[in-house]
Amino acid sequence: MKRREWAVIALVVGFLISIVMVATLSEIREKKDIYITAEKNDLLQVTLSGAVKKPGTYFCKAGTTLKEVLSRAELTSFAHRELIQFKKVIYTSQNFEIPRKTGDNNGTEKNSFEQK
Image 1 (spheres, helix red, strand yellow):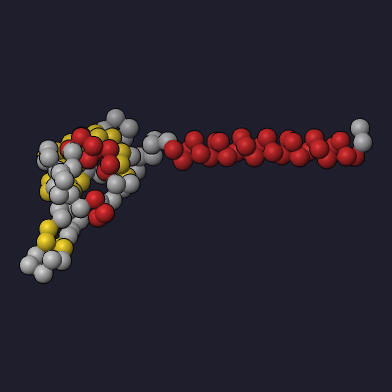
Image 2 (cartoon, one colour):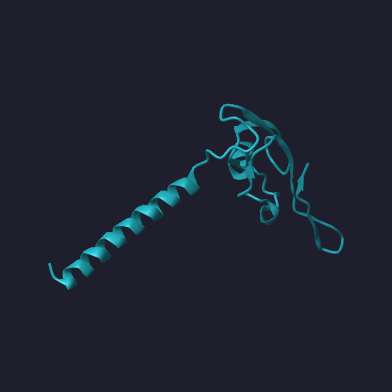
């Protein structure tokens, strides 16, 4: 084989290897099997209060996002969505106070997002 053919083969093989590596790394990143403080089968208690239609305690596995838990509790129309950390990953049992949009006499808003 000529030198040029070897170069083309090397480029193709290198390209294929990089595709496999990117796919593997993406798969690892997307897995929710990262458990820091809980075993895979242990359920965590997440208590929600504030601007949710169904306040209370919910059970989930470690690695669940706050958004997933909130989908069960259903946000109210008064929930201040800009202050909620939807992508927060939960690894321990926690309490969350979901902030409400509230106005005072000056027309300004007071907001709070508490993680207890």
